[in-house]
Amino acid sequence: GTVGLPQFVNQWNGKGNALMVAGMVMVGAIIANKAANNLTEVTPIARLTGEFEALVVPAASPFKTAADLVAALKA
Image 1 (spheres, helix red, strand yellow):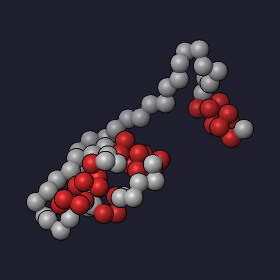
Image 2 (cartoon, helix red, strand yellow):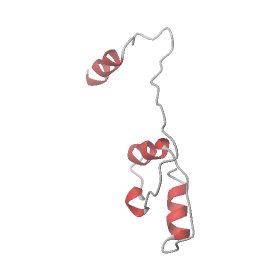
Image 3 (cartoon, one colour):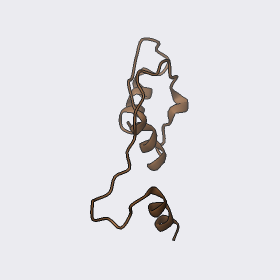
């Protein structure tokens, strides 16, 4: 995502015959990595599928709920 998006933008900018398929992971990576390129440089034309996200921890983790994790992150 954060590697492919700049390449896509640089190679295909201004050309109407290109297509990039990406998922929500790319959105998160762009935000987390403060990428130079972002989604304002492309035009979404269709949603192909919905993605379900899961937050998982090891079974031995002290976090049993999302609230436990949020509280620890805020501490």
